[in-house]
Length: 492
Image (cartoon, rainbow, N blue to C red; front, side, top):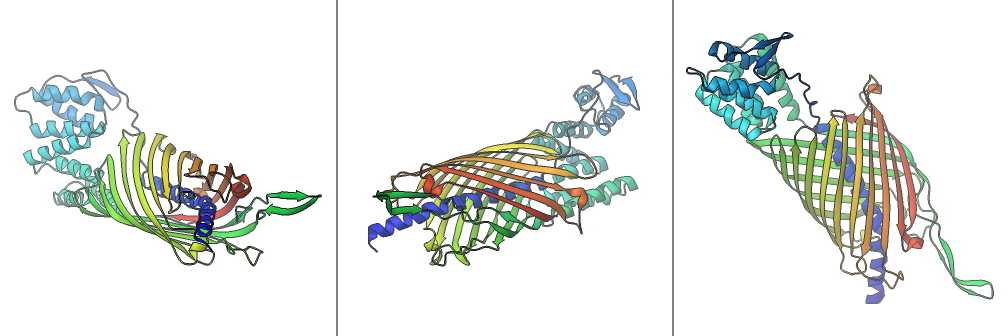
């Protein structure tokens, strides 16, 4: 085979494998987001009755609070305990003006008000100052430990709760501390989900059965083009997504994210001469890296390796680095951005289906949580695939939008849906294919489960995935594919 024909062949095979790689990226993102969402359950926004300035609601009655130590000291505690946050600034300001006031109490109150506003650095600074002023005050020590807990400073929080227990507090306070300690123990475990299921796919080979005659003479076709017909198949699939964080010190952590998923199809290619015989796949990825985590921010640098198995052989091994920043805006909004660079290296058998290349991605996401059981999210991803040959290299952008909603009631019904639109354009005209390839792809993923119908701790879940790929070279790359499966999932 000549050098030029080899380049054309690699170009053609690299182009053929692209839709499958996009599908894996989409499934990986969907699974990662699903795991992350299960770990980011946040409390509902507080609904409070705000009495007029200078007054306090206590046991259903409204009281005027005069500017005296005897009145303002208990008023501050009552306002904190009953979460009447709008009253605190006035109480604290008047309290600080009085001779003989406790600076530590004022700092503690201001700290908790800053916490209510989401200003955790200020809240921690004020509470630590209050603790220095009155180190034996059990309430200040308890609130400081809780702030460290909420800011994900695990080691300091554990030491703080131990110190609170040593102060001989009432039984109800010790029970509260025990609940925090239990929550910390849960944080320190592996989290994620595992699922197994059965289902059906109507086009495992992404075929379209396209036929055309390129050369007629006297009513006879001398040169025809016939693309493979779609192959239907039953399937068995599985998913495993795990995450664990080890606190090193303060807000610094070591994070592990192993993940694997795959599908076994009971049908194979009926053509014994076909390059692709078995469409069953398995993808495994391991991320190990550094994470800075506090109450509002997560910054991570995660090197990783990825292995892909298809056609009864290892197809490629990829290695890369992902940088990510996630930021929580108040109680309802979260934004994130990430950079990803990876290198795909195909095995000797894998090179029959693809070629080595580099992938660079930038993405941005925003999520809105109007209530604790509902999340709306959307984002944009820009990608660059760089092969050795220009005809196979491409640029693409993808927009995605999704919704998660858990319905109230004993059944525990939830739905999670994501839609993706992707536009991809190759770098150069391919003379073997006859054009410069451009694809427009739509992907829809919908899952629904019923937490109240657990069987041996497993939640039944229906997963539906539908893909439509339109191309200016539709005869080669146009296809539709639908896959549905019934899965049993265990979350932990």
